[in-house]
Amino acid sequence: MNTTTIEWTDRTWNPVTGCTRVSPGCDRCYAENIARRFAGGPGFPNGFAVTLHPERLDAPRRWRRPARVFVNSMSDLFHADIPDAFVLAVFQTMADTPQHTFQVLTKRHARMRAFCNRLGFRDPNRAEAAAGHLAIAYLADRPADVTPWDACQLPNVWLGVSAEDQARAELRIPALLRTNAAVRFVSAEPLIGPLDLEPWFKHVQTPACDRCATKGALDWRNGHLWGRCTCTCHTTVVWPNLPRPRPRRLDWVIVGGESGPGARPMDPAWARDIIELGKAAGFAVFMKQLGTAWARAHGRCRSPKGADPTYWPEHLQVRQMPAAAAIGGAR
Image (cartoon, rainbow, N blue to C red; front, top):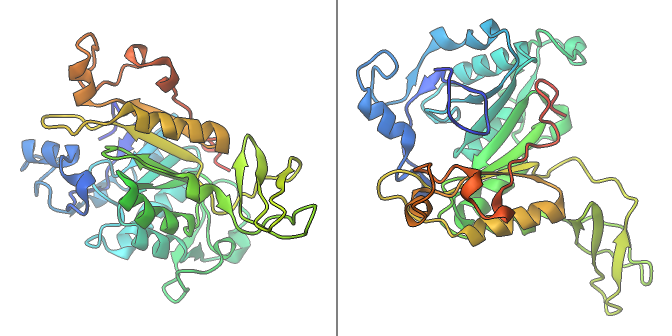
């Protein structure tokens, strides 16, 4: 349950196992294959059916060494079959162990947004606690689209969505950006189509054009706001001294090609485009693997998943963590 070969995390924690398919990225699910292989055993008593493991809830409290923890690598925490009370218990454990950084990844973006934006503190006087026990609650009567700053933001919990192609990105990323989180990330794995993330780095409310006072939607590039005025003067405007707005932005993107029998190929150019945008827009990119199809086409590659960076083109050898990557110190 604890050890893992996943390159972007230190260990896994599976208080729930089992899931159901929701999109093309699930077609060759590694978790489903593992569950079928060990069905009936102690880890997967019900195969890949959604199964709660309450005896595992306290596991992170016993880990002495701080770690990055991938939550439910064998399931989806926001699956409809997982009761709110159990999801809350998972969040309570994460709140009680600030020495760890928890990475929660989902394809159920709507429930994640609704649930996380309804988290709050039972005792408002404890809301300023930086460490230790935080008594959190699920406020069912709170609107799901409340202003995020009114809700409980756990600094050691990163929330992410899977986006295997453009259609899934356009479905899930807007919900992620409306979710209260210390760090937001996207897992583009398996990447089975080109992915344009640039629309989510545009900001509608910007300073006025120096020439005509018209406001326009500008991009973040190289740490600065820049763009072209939307009025007839077409002035290129740069504001180098404005602070980057913290709310509603992506912090991290994981990129990976599909692995295993029948793996669909990932065009390395798709990964290159995401890396280049990351450099320009200021988000971290973790290139996990180029996939089985690429590895087979490059016989010298020692990893069957194409996960050995020493065999990649140099411009793809990027494995960054978000700025909040200090264990237990998420911003």
